Amino acid sequence: MIEEKNEIQEFTIEQISEEQDIQDIVFNLMADPNLAPINYFNDFTEGTIDLSDMSNGENDETGMFCSENGQMMALSTHALHHHLETDPQQATEILVSRAMRKMICYGAAPEAVSSVLYHINIADPNGQYIAAGATKGLENACSKFKIKLADRKIRFDSFSGHGPVSPTIIISIMASIPDKDKLVTHSFKKKGNSIFMIGKSYDDINTSEYLEFYHEITESALPVFDIDIETKLHSVMKRLIESGLLSSASPVGKGGLFFSLLRAGMPSGFGFDITTDAEIRKDAFLFGEAMGRIIVGIDPKKTDEFVDLMSSLKVHFFALGHVTKGEIRIDDDSFGFIDKMTPSN
Image 1 (cartoon, rainbow, N blue to C red):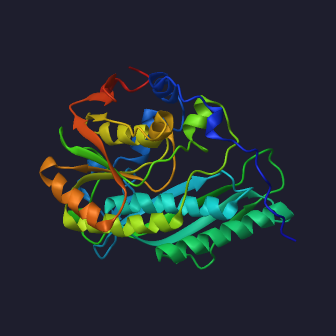
Image 2: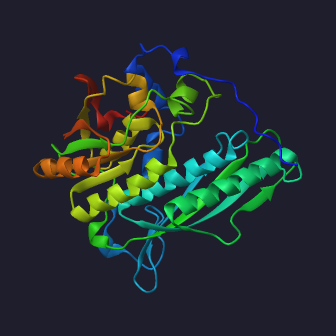
Image 3: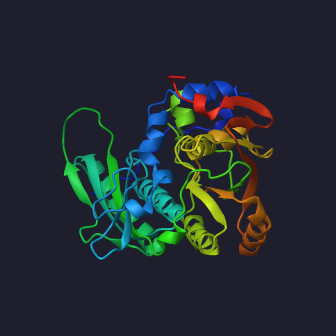
């Protein structure tokens, strides 16, 4: 018999004061192993892609490779352990959506997903509940995104011991790249480029690195998520990439907006000067990990065309600021220069 999902301890953002020292948060989070600068390049090195150097083997840095028939492909692997024991369906849908959003920022067309579920006891009713929910989440996400799910749907690594290890789902997503000339990378390209965020921000810090590492609160609900908004982002990004309006694009991921901007600036040493949304708590705006958001860079000459297209698509977007030569500024406060944003400096 499949168990009902367990209720988690309720957390609300009101438990955290709005008056937070943003600079202290930034420099403490730099020590978070999940956000350490070395990980920026493990996850986001596509800024160094030289398409002329593509070989028939997989490029370990970028996850991109050319098949034998010359088709350019992309491969990405993602994992999630949050709330698989309490809401395995939505947790799995979030994981697939994150992977899809990263692919569409490249200009890739996701084709198929395979998955492995680790650290569950399939003989236990709770393990069966996790497996059933994760499978349903995979099926629903693949249906929404119109991609294939591997025939076996989900593979299990069942165990009954080994200590208190959280159940974890790992997915691999394969995508084709229809037009390598329209490949978009995450890194900022030029000083003065405009920076916009597509999607809405919320007063939400659930399961964020900020909440768990900085405030040491590990029990909270899943972040704001709507799979229908995620699917709409696909059509929006496809239009933008086809239009040639984007100089860069990257999903808002681990560490929230601030660390996503940092990842975009580090490869070329560019900084950013942004203004936060006065209607959203500053800590949530900068470090919250709500889903459904993408950062894009736009050449100033194309800004009006971008705004007109976004307005016609009736999608929420927000003008963040612009790319700088190297300084990081938030609401007119300087955070220093991006080349100093490493523990060694």
